[in-house]
Image 1: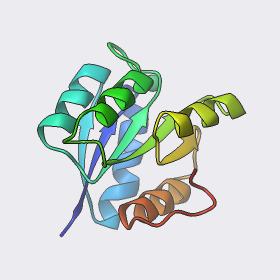
Image 2 (image 1 turned 45 degrees about the vertical axis):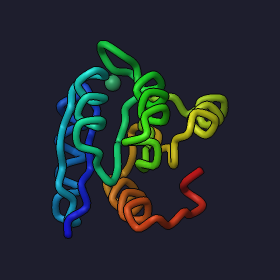
Image 3 (image 1 turned 135 degrees about the vertical axis):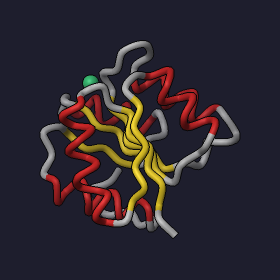
Length: 129
Ligand code: CA
C-alpha cells in the first residue's frame, strides 16, 4: 500500500519539487498551502508522514506541530520539519517540539526522498534527529 504524505508548504515551487521527488517513490501526496488547512487535513485524515514548512501563512509550522502532537488522532504521525533556517537552535526546537526529522532548504531531491522513505519505514538515521 502506498504511503500517504501530507505536504504543508506555501511555496508552489517547493510543493512541486516535493511531489516530483516523492510520487515516483510510491508516495501518495496531498498538498496544503497554509497552516490551518494543513492542520485540518492532518486531523481529518491522518497521513503516514507530514512534511511541514515552518514559515506558513495563517499559523506557523511550530504551531501546526504542537496541535498535531496534542491531538490523539495525529500524536504518533511522523513529522519532517522543513526550514530555511539552519541554526542549531532551530534544530533543537524541532527536536523539543516533537518533530521526527529536520531538513534545511534548499535540500537535494535525493536527500528528501531518502529521508522520507526512511521515516515512512520507521527507520531513524544520522540525518534525522
Ligand atoms: Ca514557507
